[in-house]
Each structure stands twice: as structure tokens, then as C-alpha cells.
Amino acid sequence: MPRWESPLFWRGKPPIYDSAFQFQLGAPGINSYRPAMNTAPFTRSLKAGLALVYPEVCQLCGDKRATPEAGFVCVSCWTQVRFIKPPFCERCGVPVAGEITTNFECANCRDMNLQFCSARSAVTARGVVLEAIHRYKYSRALWFEPFLADLLLRAALPALREEQWDLIVPVPLHHLKEREREFNQAERLAAPLARALALPLNPRLVRRVQPTRTQTLLTKNQRAENVRRAFAQRNGHGLRGERVILVDDVFTTGATTSACARVLRAAGAGEVCVWTVARGL
Ligand SMILES: [Zn+2]
Ligand SMILES: [Zn+2]
View (cartoon, protein in one colour):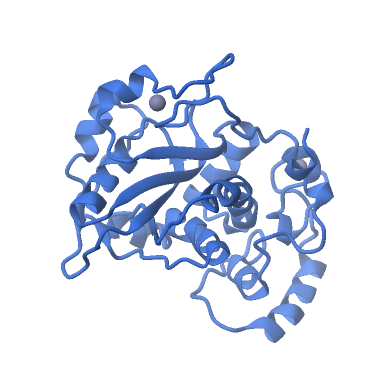
């Protein structure tokens, strides 16, 4: 495996390390999500205290050592992560087998009239990644956040730095769902990307106007229909040709991100690309 895929080869702090940010994540079993604030000195003593109570053990295998900075994921679980490598569909980023040297668009994209110029995901949504994402979203396992954000940054930063982008927009949750979950995972995962690229993050541009049913059991066409009218531009928030990076946690058929990209383009975005942590394959 390439050196950069393993946390063994981190030199110094991992790219998203931020002590105030860590404090928000808390430790396994602690309900400590709260808005960002400058708590660095307090955080250090708190973390030292927590280390006595919560051993630094991997929260996926429950066996090997793992630090809060690594999202409580050990090196052994880390090696099970599969980064998505080319060749892939130019548009949706689905990896394809064999040698492809020309621009290639898959059959799925040709049917779907996708509204983004390209979608890429860092890793495949399987095994340890899928488990971390599910526990992060549905069980408030916020300590996995540095792990998930790190996957996104490792893949997205080199690609995004090749072009000029203006703005990052997370895929919004419906306000009822956000109130229930107490956070929008897309917004939280987009924040370290925005910091690393020194780009503004705007979670208010688009809102989710319909609480869409869960997509898991729906076919591709049903998903597209389900989300077609789910998003709307927020009044008073317009764009003037900005190139937008739309961020979500998981990409499945592209129906959700495409519906969101349609609203961004109608609001005046010049171009919309999509980045997600993981991709269902
Ligand atoms: Zn582990
Ligand atoms: Zn495609």
C-alpha cells in the first residue's frame, strides 16, 4: 500500500488536528458536542483527564491502540480502507476495471442528466468505513470524525488544488432531521476541507424543504423522484458564477447531490463539483 495511506507514516500532527475541534468531539461515551469556541488551554487538561478514564483503544476492533487524533481507529483497521483509484467515470467517478485512456462516461450517467460536472469519493463505503459512518451519523459516535475527515482530505485536497474553486457547500439536512441528529454530518466533514483550502463554507445557501424518506430501499429512479423537489435556494442568498464544491458523506446514485447541484446552478453557480468521503459500490 502507498505510504500516504497509512497513519504509521504521519509526520507530526495529522492534517486536521485542531485541539479546540477535538474538544467538540469528546471521547467515546461522552456527550460533548458543542459549538466551536476557543478552549485550547482547558482542552489540554481535559484531554489529559480523559486519557485516564478512556483508554485509547480502537473503537472499531476494540482491540488495538488508537488515539483521538486518529479518530480512535487503529492502524490495523486503517489498512482495510480502500481508496478509489482511476480509471473511473469522468462524471460520477465510479471506478471501472481495465485500462481506459479516453474520457469515459458510464451508462448510469448517460441516463441520469446529472447536474454536477464531476463527483469523486475518497474511499469505498464498505467494512470499517461503512461502520464508522453509520455509528457517526446514527449513534453520535463523533470521535470518528477526524478519521472520516482525514479520508476526505487525503483524496480531495490534491485534486481540488489543481483548479480554482470559490466556495464549499454541504448537502443540507431537513431541519427536523438536523434537530433530531443535532448535527449535519456533511457540514461537519466539509469544515476541515474548507479550512485546508482556505475557502468559505456556506451551509445556508441551499435548504432542504422536504424531509425525504430514507433512500436505502429505493430503486435508482425512485431515489431521483424522491429528492427532485427536496432542495430550494434560501431567499437572499444568490451566486454570481462561483465554482462550488458540494460535500456529502456518502455518494450512492448521485440523485441527492444532483438535486442539490440543480438548485446551486439555478442560484447562479458557475460550476458544481461533488466530493464525498465514501461511495457505495
Ligand atoms: Zn482497530
Ligand atoms: Zn458515471
